[in-house]
Image (tube, rainbow, N blue to C red; front, side):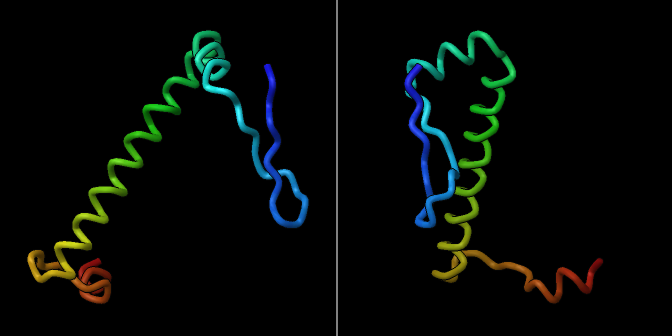
Length: 74
């Protein structure tokens, strides 16, 4: 497996790139890794939904509660 180490601008190691072919082999060996991938898809879908809601709010097509009002309700 050929990994690539990712460095930040200060030369510090911040990540590792794993070729997709190797990622699939790792998922077969460690089934918990497959859960991480589906969890990330769920997170990305939630972020995309939130961005669509922000766009609707900015265009006046969605009403929201202010942060202050929300916190006052707690």
